[in-house]
Amino acid sequence: MKKMIAVSCALSLLMLTLAACGNGANRPEQRIAGRWKSDASATEFQAMEFVPDSDNPQRGQVNLQVLSNEIKGEYEITPGDEQNRLTITYTLMMFPTTREFTFTVEEDTLVLRKGRTRIIYQRVAE
Image (cartoon, rainbow, N blue to C red; front, side):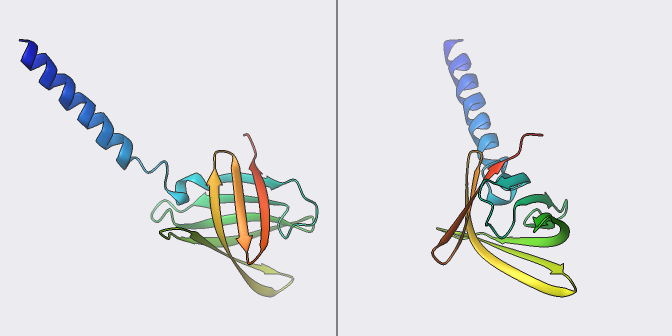
């Protein structure tokens, strides 16, 4: 009887571990989803909202606030071993624009990097 209980507990623990590994909550495309705001006034984007596509969460719609303008665009995430790449495409005053960054998400902080420039965003609570 004790062996059956021990085996049952071990199997339950194994199933929980596998479920936690496979839920995708730590994947960059899941962690970046939501609204972000910059504290610095001189940033390229004052605010961003990432809305993942239901079929492919590495792509989606991005809502940007640029120079007090609300702009809709698209984004794509390219996962990497050490760095993840974020490509944002939008049109501003009839000019199509593409911006590429590397990024990290730590808790409620999003850090975009382009060369030596680093822009920090905080998650906006909804």
